[in-house]
Length: 169
Image 1 (tube, one colour):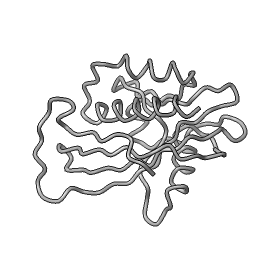
Image 2 (cartoon, rainbow, N blue to C red):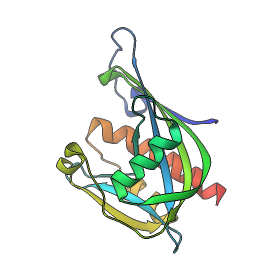
Image 3 (cartoon, rainbow, N blue to C red):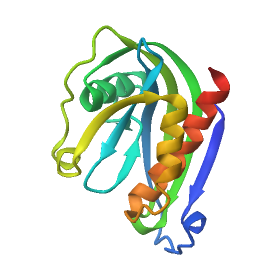
């Protein structure tokens, strides 16, 4: 898969010097389309940003296994017709973290379900919204003043992924 976007603290005018070797994290994410060609966005209502469904690859999981698990957890849905989109790379100096997000396009398989959110996701007020792909880009681009450190990276990453998705569909 091709790297679509590399994001660093300097993209936000920040400078957190890395201390030692950066921790490596791999994640799987998807632009999930429903039957009406709308995409799923998670709204972190308490932190005032939106994100695509997905998250960390655990233990011996494959990228595909993690993707399926994360989508079920975060938006309560199964997916099918999974296609590669690209990789987003992040260097988060404040957390001494290097993250690679393997990103995909996918279609909803069956009905929309109920998310099974983690405690930190519940605390952030995650809510699922289904919007057109163009509206998804507009929503994230309109969130110009994301204050949350992690949210800044998520916003820039997911805008790049959604724009790439616009070019592929």
